Length: 326
Image (tube, rainbow, N blue to C red):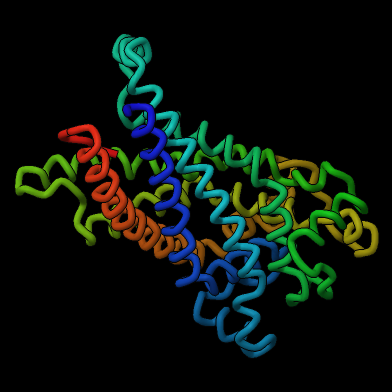
């Protein structure tokens, strides 16, 4: 029964995180679209969110704000499912191991560091599976937009097959180095979230409540994402540029800047655009990340609490288990 419970626990976290992520993305998708456009732009002054929304609607219509939404939701669901499942299965495995707990005590590993390490490892596993999908997503979202040429892809599978055929398999993994470095982003976010959550739950338990309140989950989700976003934003700009850059564009566009890896991209952005280039779109990104993360974790906690109630009830009926925490 214990093994079954641990598998169900990891699966319930994965489903809760995936659904929560998609609910949040649906609510604030136009901001996600604006962030990617700002990051990919190599010139001009960044618009504030409201001004950017008005500009897109004027030039492309309301549909421009929802370009590539289908591929984004599909990729995000897969990414969150893998990330949450990997994080919780790893955490369950390490906390159940007496040897791991003893080693942690001997090395003086704190809960924050433990969550950061597990978050980074879970992020690397996530990147290994979904990087080509994010490359496809970036191209679908930017094709046909101002300054990025005509639309040439029909969907995710068309992007994957076209890139593989015309540019080689390595281009499906464009930006993978920045993606691996950006494993620190959700790791920082989750480490902050889980560490502060434990303190808040401990305080709530004194008042007879074993979970976070809705306001606590929303605010903590926003705060943790804000910290993670500011810490890693230049890497996100490099990641977007590398994912969208195609060999065909470089050969046909006069004066196009060629990027050869994450650090080369960051160096060239700084050289030609200055600090402004490395933080292009950060204002919109902070709104985007904060609102999406806050709503995602709020939804995640609500779904997880409901799943936990059902699963624990069923397991208690079958095995007479008493206090079980997923």
